[in-house]
Length: 262
Image 1: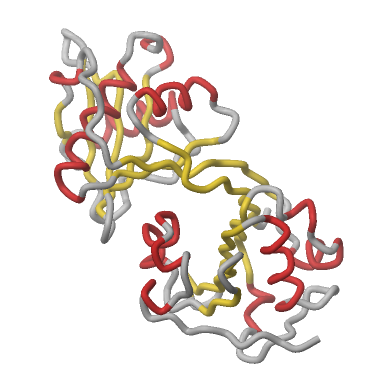
Image 2: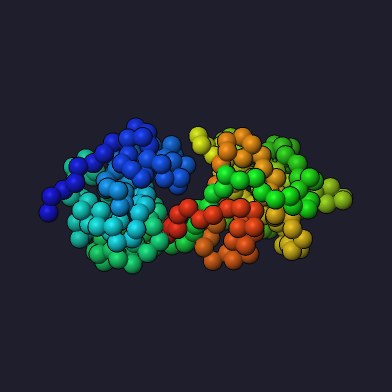
């Protein structure tokens, strides 16, 4: 088997089509820290170094084609077929098109040793959402003055969120009841081509009143005005969230299975 030559893309414009214009790739590329890349127009695999001591795999494309790229890059025991990628052994997280893991050589999957699994979808929109009741009551929060309240809502409603108050550059928004109590929140992160939403949560006792929709609509409206595109991630089995985001104009851009170290 001939080992594929790695690309060293400095920007998405260095990638082959269609990946140079793929919304998911373009949206995330700046977070991948000088990646290596292998693949063609059917699928592409990135090996990134988010930290000096860890590595991450990101793969897009049809599952069978992405499996073929992985087979070209990794030996059946999880070693590397390609030079300059010894840190394949340091992979702490791998996010691949959903369905790819089912086709992987069992030895490769076992060698990666990434037992914690989540299935999620990356969604995007470039259209202003319809007006939502309560949206005009959503206000930007102060990440310092309102920190205790934000953390309390997260602890009750979204304790596993990846967007937390210590994330540099995050902006926070919320809806308060008539007594001034914070009942729903959401956060945004500015990326080169989009605003990314996260930590959207409503206090359990206040769910079913459209507060999550109001906060999401307000953040989406501001994000579209700012960059022209808004993105977010949601767990694939969250049917109520899917209905909400679809109603607000979001579409699925990538179906993902992420595996992490325990």
